[in-house]
Length: 447
Image (cartoon, rainbow, N blue to C red):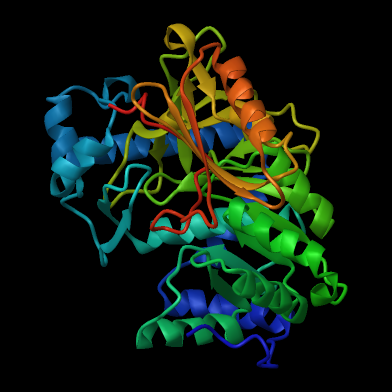
């Protein structure tokens, strides 16, 4: 059971941020506040100091892996721990060799974690409190760019279950009434639940809304339909994560909620990789991750390899996260940050469609076709292995042969191929088990 939205108690934000949050982190054994302060001070140290810090952390982690992590020790076979000599780490390798990737000198409790990934095959790994604390400090540093402070009221739309056990209920109450943090489930988004969420936002009045963009946009659209529920509330910022943030979704959220909409890029296994600044550039958290592009094409785009520089308990070095992108240059953003950037982020391998002669077409191209139809409230497209398309559509008004023909012709146009298109009108589209919604998915590129 989630906290009832009409419960009146709200912790004063300054008290939550200056007293209760630091105390909570210390009791959890995390030095998050100290790490956050170091990040903020480091922003003023200059590009040379940032570069030295980054390089020293890479060298320290690689030396640790060579000496204390059995799988890397065997892979290096006595060679000096140079980054290019480390094999690319695949998800299947982690699944098959999990314990061999755990450091033999790991201290403190190992914290189990897992991610379902895009394929639904769970990946189990271990982390520690230092990595957790630095991950959380990165989040807070980036949110500070938008005026969000620890202790500010926050609502997360996340893949949490509707029904919670006793321990989870106690944690929910602690987070809600002491730390000003509320998690609302991304599951079972009925019209009634969406209206309840919209009303809760108007009463709780969070400064930050965080979570899946496909869920946040539906809540925002509900507020547009029922503006009285907002009671004049507007957030300081919306931060979207875990899904591709498409332009039309960003624009809709920003237009309705009248605030900046930023993209956070990361994952449970790789950590927080990058975050948008107020100028819309994705800055890499280079104090804590190293990012490479594997086999870039002529445009500099390739698979992203991430090394988490804080993952000493179970290091992920040159880990293929499954996304594609291109690196940008540091020190060129109008925001003034010296952090390097991701100039391009294209999503996962199976976010791409396959067109004529096997060429890849980014899934956002399908969005441009679908968004031209005002009848489309929501859709999901799956490309099968034979390149045919199955499209589910929730229509908000009358749908006829003309709309189906427009979709079919549009898909043929972007793929440069007359593939079969099967379109079905549905009442609802189920999310994945994590609560995420995938707009586009291709089985044609899965191996």
